[in-house]
Every structure is written in structure tokens, then in C-alpha cells.
Figure 1 (cartoon, rainbow, N blue to C red):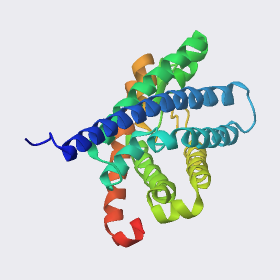
Figure 2: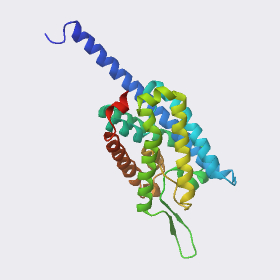
Figure 3: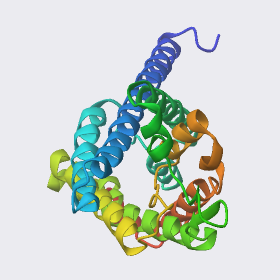
Figure 4: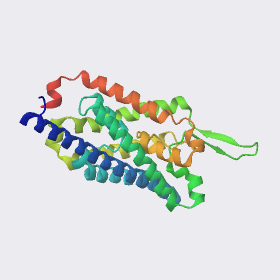
Length: 268
């Protein structure tokens, strides 16, 4: 009977082990994303609350350090994704299976919610309302002499920023991690550091170039945007689709780009 011989037993054990590893890895993704959301949103809030002259610079530097540390912590277990963008890009380029990417993304979204809940439990109501739990926003409503006024960035501009910045993120840093030859040559610490620095630079650029109140800057991580939106609600849902659609478009564009590269350059 099929599956009753030695080969069948080995296959069953291997499948069970693989399944266990995937779920263990998804737990690492969940916890990593939860810590990421809590840490990043705390950094955003504290950077502005301290009233420093260079909040964007300090915020970007701290985010770069945080990303690097969390990637190093989760890499041995799950590959260090902690971002649906990386999981989707890895799936589209053949690095991981679609099913594994789906499990990772679900875990990351749950982690984003837990991170937002943790942040909500430690900040006071005033800070929560002022910074919307550090969530991703396109616009906010502010009082004015003529009544409530909506300020922020146009949806079209925000969408293009998400697409361009996410593609730059994938092209300049994640590409190195996916390329086995470069990753092996540079080493884990260097690769994770490069990813952290690139994220920090993109955050700095997106928050300073636009310089628009009401716009929180590029998300590049739908799970991070989803957490505060589910917990805080309200205006965080306005244009929330942009923080999903933009990265997805960028992932597809990145995958198409990799198809143009000879396969021997990717897997040597």
C-alpha cells in the first residue's frame, strides 16, 4: 500500500516537520510584526512629542536601527520578513511558496493588530487621538474658522508614492537578500543593515519631500497600517486601500523585473 513503506514514512515525517517549521516561523513573523508596529509607532510619536528640531531625521534613524535588529532576530526562524510586501515579493519571485506567503501575511496582519493594541494600552487618550496610534493616514480633519477642514495628500499622489517607494525598497535592498550570491558574500548582518538603512532613508524622504500635514508618509508595510486602522478606526480607513494597492503593484512590477534577469544571476 502506498505510504506504508519506509519511503512513505520518511515523506510523512518530512511533511509534518516542514509544517511545524512553517507555523513556528509564522509565530516569529507575528511577534516580530507586533514588536515592529509597537516600536515604530512609538518612535513616530516620541519623535514629535520631544519637539526636537529634526524629528524626521531622528525618527528615520531610529526606524532604521529597529528594522535591522528585528530582521536579525527573526531571520534564523522565518527568514525575517515581518512585512507582507517582502512575503508577497518572495512568493512572486519563487523564493517561497504562495501558501507559505499567505500564512506569513496572515500572521503579520495579526501581529500588526497586537502591536497597535499594545501601544493603545500604554499611551494616554490625548496622544492616541493626536497621533492616531501612529497609523497610516492620507488626510486628517482639523478645526478652522469656517468649520472642519480636511488637510493632507491627494490619493493619486499617495498611491504613486507607495508604488515608487516600495519598488525602490525592493530593488535596492530586498533584491540583495533574494540574490543568494550577494547575500552569502555580504553576510546576514550587512544585508539586514542595508534593508534597515534603505527603509530609514525612504521614510525620511517621504515625510520631508511632501511636507504635508495630515499625511503620515509611505507605509510600505500594509500590516503596520492595518493594525492601528482596526484598533483606532475613524479616519484611518480613509484611503486605507492605497497602503495595500501601492505595495501590491510594486511587488508585481518587481517580480516582472526579476523575470528579465538571467536565472543564473539569481541562484549562483
